Image 1 (spheres, helix red, strand yellow):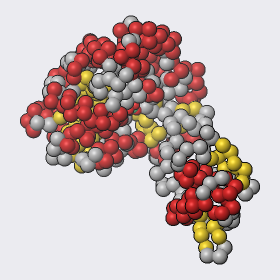
Image 2 (cartoon, helix red, strand yellow):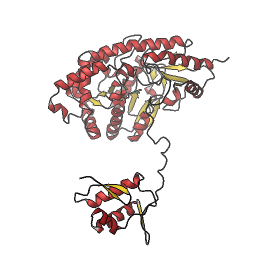
Image 3 (cartoon, helix red, strand yellow):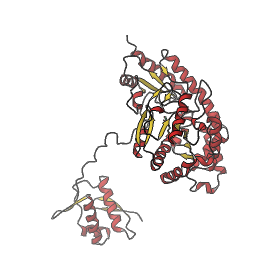
Image 4 (cartoon, helix red, strand yellow):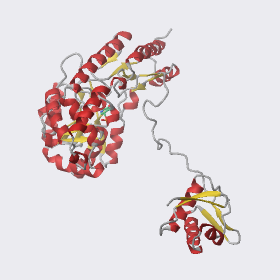
Length: 465
Ligand SMILES: Cc1ncc(COP(=O)(O)O)c(C=O)c1O
């Protein structure tokens, strides 16, 4: 029974019905100190009178006071009884140590933040219909703990989809569903480290989190140069793992040339290395059919990772890996230990979405929409400013000569536009000419034109008087 005891001027929320009375009293006092109802310096009643007040044995109160004194909540001084201790203020969060602001949480009038799809175009109706179908066909056993690799339904549907849409050669038993590429990569790093790998090679520019994830798992991190043909594995040094974005380099926007694709596979075969293929936006190619996944050429040396973060929404936290046979068991074990498996409900809904054809329709619609946006970006800027292939959800925009990334992002910010400089994606020593990474998919359709106009104005400033 939970009771509120009014004693020495404050309410103590105590559950004194059970045998753990001392614990209950300690908890209530701790809470009262923590939330400020008992400020520092407050003199507590004597153990005898509080015990009488609460109907407890005196010893219970004495022990509770002693425990809280030992923990630093209370101070006991001879002759002056027990008081609430002075506690040092909480230390300020270490720089960068606090929770990062959620992307998009800021109040910008316009945002061309790279990395996300147009969230306003999420196929809500189709998703709801797919969820309803999933719920009406799920059996009770589907709601219990399941296979760490993910639901059979989603893995079966995905194996077919990835084969037909991305040229991935796999089977349901080799697929594992994860909470985004981020979790997939983290678990891979631990599994590969445990298997004897010592270092990963990352493209010279990429997701900043990757090197932190890899080093957190105890792997060394090397940087691979990227030129117009994509990443060059000739410079891989001693790394046993190369993380590549072959279909559309993030964020430089190049495609891995046939020569470099073969070089990557020959390297992997020669040294027994592995390529992690981050196929984050492979469905979005506008000038030709999307290139098939590198994994299709050598499923034993390439770990394919796809994600719903660009095709649907990052908030779903759904991604999938197609693993070489020897990694399936250790990776499933790692996934089991991390979180048993990803949420069954969203997996079942995604399986329905894909099986019904609604996923393909959504991707086709978005492909058209993003292609138009990219065309508008190219048309809005002086010729030659937009780098990279016609693909994906972002483009590299070179700055006018003399304009630094810091100036461009600050000017944009002063006009209410959020943009990011290329240098914030640098993972190695090689700096590049200043550029912005423009996420043209980010704003809702109605807001894109205005964002583009601000970008035009900002870049025009650099063109001089
Ligand atoms: C290069 C790249 N890979 C993968 C992802 C997807 O990560 P996740 O699936 O964890 O959302 C992103 C998202 O920003 C990305 O930019």
